[in-house]
Image (cartoon, rainbow, N blue to C red; front, top):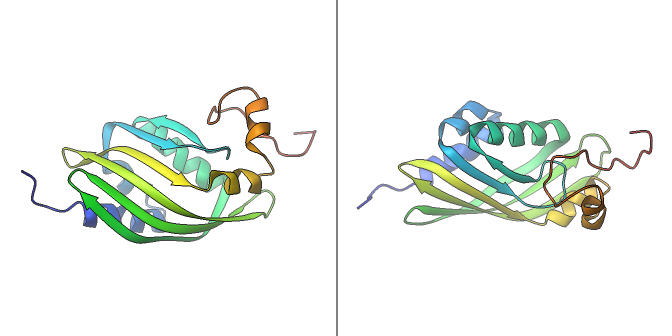
Length: 156
């Protein structure tokens, strides 16, 4: 039976994110990690493995400026950890802002993060990119597919 708490480890991941320390985040992940970020924003989608998570984090960094990202509560039950918090961000291309409360669910296995599910107001993020969920679907597939997002500029 596991006695240690995963809370310090998960809090450390949020600290690493705030510092831009992607390598620390990746080192905490299982080789076969599943990272699920649903929604209509260009970085949304399901990623697999550390390379997929690196791709997700790079897309977030490329597309938005995180203005506030606070992990307010960390709740734990066995191999599951839930982080409740809030974020404000700005789309770099347009300057549009969005904010949302979030719940991030972590499933741990063997001391590593095996699965992450990110829950937030996905419509707020997609809208800040100038897209609706319907527009995203019309652009060629289910939400999260890695096609180029609609920019609002017909030349792009």
